[in-house]
Amino acid sequence: MLTTHVLLPLYNYLKNDRSLSYVAEILSFIGSPEEEILKRQLDRIRYMCDYAYRHTTYYRNLFDDLGIQEPARLTLEDYRRIPVLSKAIIRDRLDDLKSREFTEGELRKTATGGTTSSPTAFYSDWDATYRKRSATAVFDGWMGFLPGMKAAYLWGASQDFAQPKSLKQKLLNDLVQRQLFLAATPLDDEIMEQYYRTLRSYRPFLLQSYPNPLEIFADFLKRKAYRLDIAALSCTAEPLLDSQRSLISEVFRQVPCNWYGAREAGRIATECALHDGMHVNSYCLHVDVVTSTYVDSGMGSIVLTDLWNKAMPLIRYEIGDVGRITADPCPCGCPLPRILEMQGRVTDTFVNSRGQKIAGVGFTNRYIKDAREIAAMQIIQHAIGEFEIKVVAAERFGPDTEAWLRQKLDEFMLEPTRLSITQVREILPENSGKTRFCKNLIL
Image 1 (cartoon, rainbow, N blue to C red):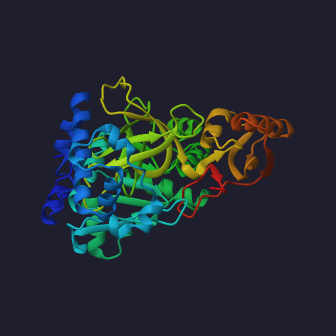
Image 2: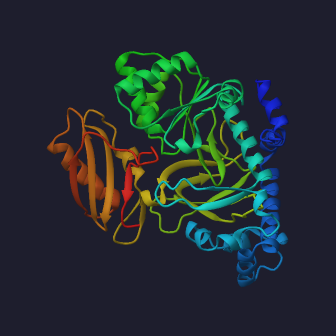
Image 3: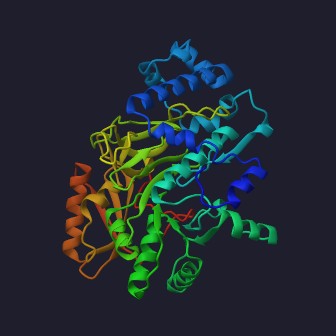
């Protein structure tokens, strides 16, 4: 059992919570040869497609239309013929996607985060939920963090961490869950001073955050010459820019572990100690990309299949993010494929007049290197060929910087653009607490 804390497994046992029951199975899976992993993934794809065919109206009709009569013997070629499942389809066909095998009381209902659109409801069975939680424990173990250790969260989604109110809830958190929640927005020096003192007293093993608020907090600690001894840092929910990773590593003396997840899929991918791409959670998910009209070679919309959730099978589900994946071996020795780049949401992707898609976050990572000119920025596409850049100007920002931005944006979009540049005091986060470095308002 993957834990250092005796009260947590005891609590799970009393509550019949099997959140850590698949840890050994997942560790064995990850330690298998690549050929065995690929075989077991195909077996699970076939199982889930066959199950969906027999137990859901949506997939019965879809597979019949595709001429797939024996999903249990599905080939990879037939699997890739299955149209992607969009959030719009889920909203329109929710009842047809749910398994007839489960009653409403046996299902766990939740929803997507809704960062760029309204949340989409989905269902999970409890066995699949426990497998996802076990996988999270395994991948967090790569940072040395084990269930039951103290963790602090600089987080924007308050619904993820309900503050304990009753004495029973407070004791449960203090003795078993051991989690500290700190709101990621708003942040000012007074608030961050309190966060610093709270963290210094609480002494968590792990600090998890969105990259942008952690960057702001790191800058505050650097200005104040404050030191926090935290063994592990993790970032998720936004692209982790090179400049952010550099500052955070300098201030905390720890390289943050970047990972990628979603409420409907659990932990999707996690960095190893080499920080050279994120290893895919192939035990729970099959992940690939649909490149279509993306300009960057190999970049595309991320599509995944949940290998365990029978309550509402998600087969070739287009999650709404853009990235690049490779099966090339990692020097760390882990055989799991890696997501080499995460370039944000599909709606953070820009479109030129030829219909080519270009991941917007790449502009920031590729060009913006000198913090003496630009402290922060956000790019917005209002129409084809029409852009706005909001800039938090640094000391050397001036007309030459503006001219340089116009030139580089034309190069980035592969055509001339019309650009307005607006100086602002700060780039405001979304209501979720996440910061979007680029926005496409026409998608």
